[in-house]
Image (cartoon, rainbow, N blue to C red):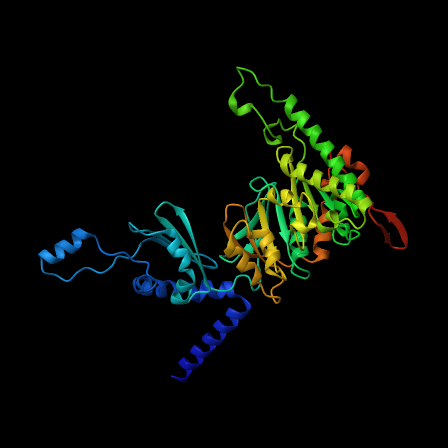
Length: 452
């Protein structure tokens, strides 16, 4: 008997240690079984308590009266399937007539408490079908990205969502994005993770970092062009607009519209061009947009207006030419001057890290989702890297990027420096790489430019 108790205590202690050190292993070993049983046992009572049931059909009530039987109970949504994952459970439900998917979204917090799980996120799969993604533990506490994540040339895994899914930055789907956040909110780490994810891909990275290049210059080995002050930034953007015009000339020359040409071969962007003519896609990263939009003296206003005009042109026209924008800043409101709201309207993707006031969150999500504004304001200081990501459709979710150190990002960019393409219009903005001292002798290190 004593041996049995000792064995149980050892198992309990091992489970607690496993839960603390390896929550995913604990969930797959113990948690998923207990949670599945708990959800199935409590399902009907929870649906009834949350008001997610409908009265029985009239013919059932009539039949009960005729046969003098008790009236049937209210009907819960039908369970289509329940599938365990490495982070939680996925419950797919078939709605009853008269139910709305919004009711499940509004009841997600009550469902979380009733089922004893960490988080519940509801989404509509199709008409009449709702999926509840339930996480068994806090996946954002210690972010561990999956080892194998499906991606693409312009689809980069950058963070983990609160429902356990990987959050991608997909430039083909969302060409331009805005990233706001206060100091020490994790905004720079998110950008660093994005650059490290883009480095192994066949893309050209163009950076504007008006903080004297302290954020992007360490990654210069992988950058085709880099500007570290507003004067150079204005010239760089003008050159990028010239490059965009040249790409459009290539697209226009290769459209070859004729009666006998199949519709699938008519192109209006770079992705339908032949492989040997297709230019490399360009990702433009602006580290602090306020430094570009502010004018200290009246003489700077002309340069400032030209910068904003070029950014708006790139946002409006750049997608077809393979130019994608990633704009970062602490604030992005109308106080930055004329044209800034026009630029913001072109930025479909929105990511908001911890902000200092509700107004800053409104700049990102005020015209999209009030719930996302509230979620952004509630991000705590003890969770750097946590953010709210959404787009113009109104959908949003909490995410957290893995902590990518500057050393890791630098090593990744240096390892893939040979992938840095050369663009003639941007050649004079090619960053000069620092000289490395190796074994007592000076050896310059230069990036190898790929063919364009």
